[in-house]
Structure formats: C-alpha cells, structure tokens
Image (tube, rainbow, N blue to C red; front, top):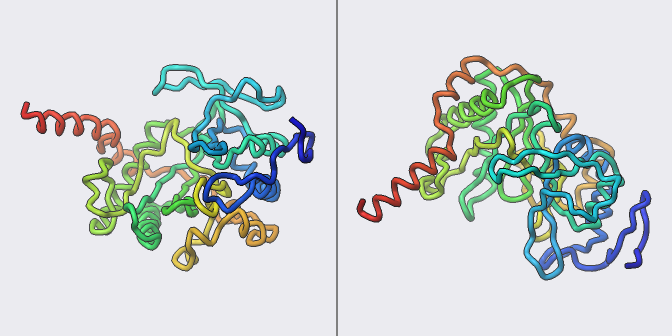
Length: 315
C-alpha cells in the first residue's frame, strides 16, 4: 500500500478517509491532532502498558491490548500477566512520537494507559464520575466538587479532567511504594466519603439498577485498571478529547468544547494537565484503614447478582 506521506519515518495512509461514521472527521485530522499534542500526551503514556481503542471503516470500535504481530520492531512492548483472562498480554509502550504516529495510522483513537509504569507502582488514585444515562455534565461537575471536598477533608488534592464522554475524572498523585491493596482501599474510602456529602446526588452503587438516577462515583479504577489519558480523543461524534480543567473553571465548560479540532489552539503552548497536577502525596492511614472495611465493589456486585438471580428463580 502506498503512503500519502511519511512523518518521522512512519508511512501514513488513507489520510482523507472518514475516521468513523458520524465523526465529522478524517483520519488526517486524527493524525494531525496527535502530532500537535504529542509533547503533552506522551508524558502521560510513556513507560505505561497501553490499551487503545481502534476503529475500522464500517466496523464497530474495538479495544486492542495485545500488540499485533505486524507492528514495527521499534514499537517497544512489555509482557504483563492478565489475571482476569489468565494469560500474558504483550502491551505497547508508547514512548515517542514515532510510535504515536504509528498508532494514529492504525486508527487508534483512544489511549488508555495503566495507572503505573511497567513493573512499577501505581502513580495515581483515580475516581471516575459517571452521570446517569442522559444526565447532564453539570451533575458530573457537582459530583467532582464532592470528591474535591472529600480530598480536602483528608488533606489531599487532585486534578480534574473531562472524560471526553459525559463524565469527569479526578486524579490524585500518590507517593511511590503504596501497595495496590492500600491504594484501592483509599479509593473506596474517598468515593464513600464523597457520596456521603450529598447522597441525593451521588452513589457508589456498582449495580446500575441501584443508582436511582444518581452520579456513579466509580472507585474501582485501581490495580490493573486503565483510564483514558488526558488529551486522548474519544470514539464519539465530533471526536471530543479528555481535557484538563482548572477546578474553578469546571462549571463553565462543556465536554463538547474540547475536540481534536479545538484543543491545539486552546493549549497555546501550555500543558495544563502537568500544570494543574499536585505533587505526589502520602495517603492518610485512617483513609486506608476505612477503605479496607468497605467491600470490593465488583466482588460484592457479583455475589449480589447471584443472590438476586436465585431470588428470581424462587430458590
């Protein structure tokens, strides 16, 4: 296949094809965007096992974890044991512009790095704020402010970004060496504390039917979980971008303000995610201790689902 052009030694093809149905965007727009923000997105991808969401013409989007066999030899990889699937997964490490451009040419739209570097400790605690179906972004904003208050009450601080979909993500940088179990416990405790500040608005209920139209504070993003990176596009109409926002500005923005078309000009040479991120912090012992008393949501939901199924069968 002949290339339309070459950048950094990477052949780029079919640049003027639509990116995906309803995107209003071409593959060239994706490549140009990722190239323009490479200096911002690469620092949050570097050395972290990477999953991507790719699109192909006329096909549903799909998440790719294993690096395909046809990947260039210069794409660095790391083998990680996946407990859920009980197999080794060969993840890419997107450490440089050349690799990023290669992924862009593969129609990799979304970039979901691990919460820690390969073989290292998680660097951030994350809370994912998900409004109910059809719920306004304003609900996610209000829930994010609850999380901010819960953090402040614990002597912590975080940075917030739009998810690029309908919600928001709060990232809290932590000191190195925190055991994954303690990080997960602290995340559960912060989610619970935030929900208690306004139980009419927010919930930590993992089972969707139990959320009663409230914002779901997802405190399960720990361990081997991934979260879409700051500056990553999303596979949605208009190709929005997960974008960092100052806390004081959160109520004045809409997810649609940030797209592959608008973000390069909004950045104007800055890196707001790096600017807004607090330094790594020590997790308070009482927060970790409280979290260890809270059941793991996925496990609890699994047992509850089985119980309800038995009840429906009349057992």
